Image 1 (cartoon, helix red, strand yellow):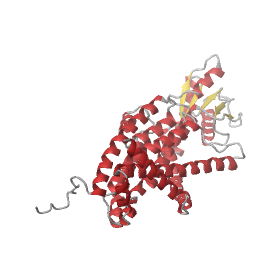
Image 2 (cartoon, one colour):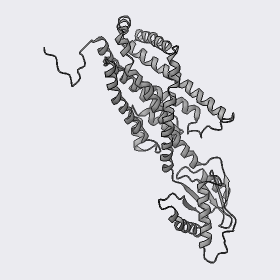
Image 3 (cartoon, helix red, strand yellow):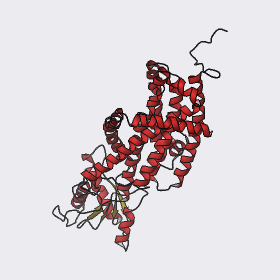
Image 4 (cartoon, helix red, strand yellow):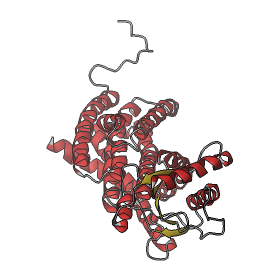
Length: 407
């Protein structure tokens, strides 16, 4: 085992420096600009999906009669939005300590609210993260004006004081919304980086098999060392590129944010430093899980045409894995999230989403150990397939569509 690890380190170091010091590595660093553009488009779609996941609710601290008037006004104005889209109203009985009640409502995580509407209809005050000219504020002001008009015998007129809006920096509702977006974007970035880098392993051995370099290596070191060394060299190369990309993004946010990171989105549940660290760890496990399988499969190919034939099913498998992990977003304690966290190939994607939504760290330690176990098992199986395809030792693998040779 010691000899295998030593030889794997030598081969990995050779491949790493040969790649990083080459001129083509610069193009490798520029390459993600294209999937990033696609990722922005998917992110816009994810934003729309996430906005539907979080129901817009405003807590109205008033008597049941006043809220009923607002609800009736909302129903009368419903003709203006036949497809829905109006903010929901939740009646809350006033308490003695209004400041504490308002703070508790805005900090609520179960059915979070966008804001809190207080005061009678002649002097309403809305507190939340929305601005004075936001859609929610305009809707509530329309409800209030309509309620004033519809209240029989009241002295209210359309000229009564308008809705006062007190804007806060964040609330539980906005934090939850941002965490859902971060969870989806984290999965999306992890998916694109993995599909971009792990897929390269399908053709990793083709060149060396073509120029007989693999035969020279196999005669000098164990074949398992070749497999492990090349796999971890590609992982190190990928992590080098990702580190450069992350540093570039941080510098861009600092520069365009006026020097104070004003453009940085709200932090995920575990915080940005831990989230980025977990992202790198989950990329490593995802890369090793898929990369070991792809390197073993890719070693079966002898021509470029065969590699191209293998690329389509491999890509579709990755897409299915990604879609399965997407089902875990929004409900980290649900059945789908737990199943995705247990299945080894979807586990990294499910857990990076969990890091955005739940602040507990111990599940990540358990998940990383679980994924490391499967990495070891898949490495062992893929190395066996790799050995048979390279050295043609042992009983050869016969694909179902190939005929048996006549004895």
